[in-house]
Length: 74
Length: 350
Image 1 (cartoon, rainbow over the protein chains, first blue to last red):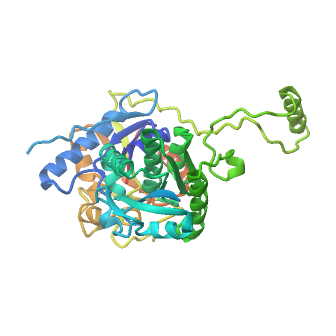
Image 2: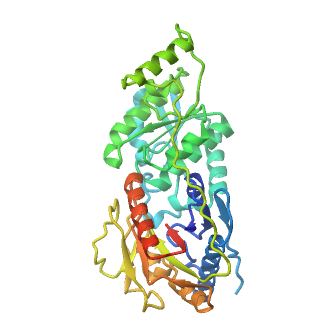
């Protein structure tokens, strides 16, 4: 059963050997950024979740980092 | 006189808790916060010439920038030894202590002493780094072991600073780095090996000369097939639970997990859910629980027909979870996921 871990401490996830790792925004708010307007924050979150879904659909052989495209513009 | 730079997080610099975890790298001349304790333990033989501090979150979110700044601050003060921590069982702090020690030892050639509990994730990095100039001393789990830890760090620091040769880990008490050094023995290898084999056959205790760290190897699971509509579940270690914390999770060292039904829930409203977790500032999560359980995004993607979201989500607040307990919790959740015929999982970790 594939698992995508969404974490801002992704080097720890890599070090312990997690297979599919999604780079999150920050430790206290992994899925989004409260500094952004709420609509853009929601878009960032959606991008992170989509990246995680893409990760569990991707073949990996070793700990692999997936980067959400979170350079959103308003 | 051994000159020492002490590197600590914002909490042990006395600047504040989770609300200050975002502060950038800074320096105080002399000893401040926990470094005062180190100065006392060093006595007259050593001097803390500066205390370098940084926010726990800042380091992990700006690691290259933070390390470059720390290198600059340490380098300009030319200490004999650098001390980082003790970090006890704080994961973010422990990992940063090891990364900083390694980067100071590599970049400046200065010996470093750090300290933390043996189950801190920093220990894994330390074993990977295998740096001859970095020594990690074991501590108790919590800051209740502060004096003891500072005493051990100070003794080690003074020995390193005076150029004393440090022996193998088993004799000196630091955590082994997996570095093998040649040693003379008065008996040939074949005799020692046969003796060990005989002891093993007689079920007697024996000590290997080549210890190997056993790691839990995880083979990556096969991906989901693109054609099929998958059943997806979410696990979160953020501690997001229904308001009022009905199962009485603690803010640290939890020993059980729960799942909460969200079948009829479209979004997690502030005030109906809360984050129970002592390891990060939960204000953002309480204002918008989607940062830990992104239900709004999941619902909109589900509506587009990408997958089916399982009717409940799993939670255990991850703060200070010991690996043995978390392994058991992971096995229990995995068994439940299988029983519920889940195909894939998103795990949100703070």
